[in-house]
Amino acid sequence: MIKNEAKKTINIGVVGLGNIAQQHISNILERKVAGACVSAVCSRDQNALSLHYKQTHNINHYTHYQDLVNAKEVDAVIIATPTMSHFEIAKYALEQNVHVMLEKPIGLSSYEGEVLLSCQSSKTVFALMLNQRTDPVFAKMKDIVDSGLLGNIQRTHWTMTNWFRPEIYYQVSDWRATWKGEGGGLLVNQAIHNLDVFQWICGLPNKIKAFCEFGKYHNIEVEDEVTAFLRYPNGATGLFIGSTGEAPGINRFDIIGDKASLMFNSGRLSLCTNSVSTAEFSQQTDDMFGMPDTDKENIEIEEAVNQHAVIMSNFVAAIDKNEELIAPAADGLASLDIANAMLLSTWQNTEVSLPLDRSEYQQNLDLKIASSSLRTKSLRKANVDMSASYR
Image (cartoon, rainbow, N blue to C red; front, side, top):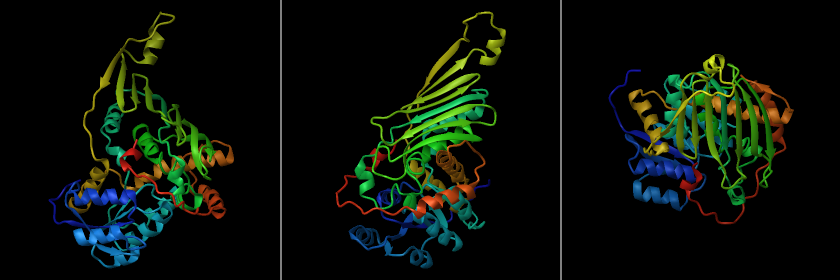
């Protein structure tokens, strides 16, 4: 793709003023996102925070997203609202040819995401905040797998159980961890990042059999634990385990190939390379208990990045300089398909094939939504340290 020189400052409106929205605003105000400024914010009520932005940075406040978009003072919007409103707000912005950066997930379901993508015109940039694609460790893992160094992938395994969330995380929200407000729990909130990176590096499975536990550790109606078995088109197998109920939890991601194995464990990356491929050694050796010689390398990655700022900078550059997106919104369908397939497999107690029948899943989700309601928020005051939320 040919890149052009920068033309102007991109005016951004932020819809929502919750924790993640404030982080995006701070990144832009602190000039960690080149070529962008915040020109407007939107929340249901004007509050001390919005008044602060007006007084300190001359940022206008709106109480309805349509008014913000219609005012024509923004080139793009960041949508950082509860999941249940993603579809409605993004659809309106896209129909007005306003560029959209949408917080994950792309919708309550991949069916909803597919409909939303149909609203995008050739004039608009539509991106998703899949920030973990910029993690230097995961980027290195993808480079290694894509290089063919591992040979044919035989098995994948990610145990991601350090997404622990205490009860207050749910109590102070009326929408979180409800079918009506979020369309799920662990899989569509926390682990959607892992599922995205999983398929981004290893590819999409074609069959999934999952066992989800609903409200096992928390007073919620949606899943807070999952164990899922995967099969890939080349015959490889996989396992994904996630939980928000374990402490301290585990974060280990293994990719086993015929020629080498790649292992990620709590931020540390190692590569074991066979002297000859496993299949070749197995056929040629006369040693009954033999094993190919291996060379182990610990891969040191010292680089640290502001993941959200990198994705936002790329979004701005895509608008202004036609730069290729790191995380186009369409890429959000794959991880959501996997999450939806895991839930459908549990509900139906059967193996689910991919590509997912998105209409079938939506029908099942609609039944859950029909019997779901938002909770009454607790009056307890939660201590919020957003840096502690990232794993």
